[in-house]
Amino acid sequence: MPRIALILPDLLQRAGMAAVLERYFAPVEVEQFGTADDTLRENGLFDVYFTDCAVFTANVDFFLPRRSQCVILVPDGSAALPGTETPRVIATGGTLEELLDHIGKVLVPVRSAAETPSDELSAREVQVLQLVVSGAINKEIADRLNISLNTVLTHRKNIAAKLGIKTISGLTLYALMHGYVSTEDINT
Image (cartoon, rainbow, N blue to C red; front, top):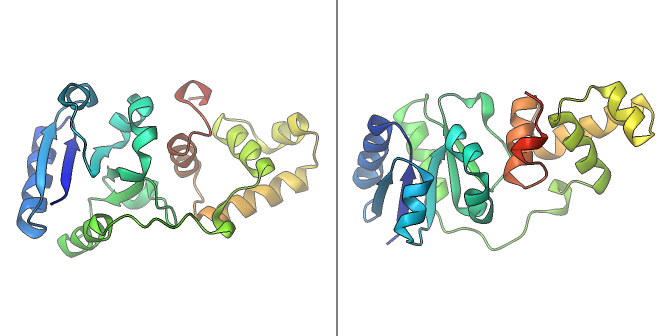
């Protein structure tokens, strides 16, 4: 039976997710927490951690070692990370059928296979990604890495194609979740 931790500050959202999981995905063991600190005190091992963007970014040190088990709930699909497996992002603003479909995919046992090579970023693409999420514009990236502006644009195009992410917020979330940047690296 899967053990699921709901780490959501909003009581109504926690209770609603618990009800959905228990009703549609039984048998599951669901434990609810208001903060990641509560989860740390619990010292339990969970198969899946459901949380939101704010809790994830505020507790990135807690979640990064567990990123393959994390699910981030967002109100709409704007921060969704298509093509990524760890952690997963689920939009809660859609229909019940869509939500159930996404949760069902998460609760399928985690695949042991690594990401395909086409999904892996090169070392230079990681550098470009780090600079993009730190707030640097294309010209600054070109100057810092001593490459042409066209090369920067090509790297950005390749990153978007490999990850399926086109927004800065999506790239930032991806970089945080994969340990490429810390919250201190992000220019707000």
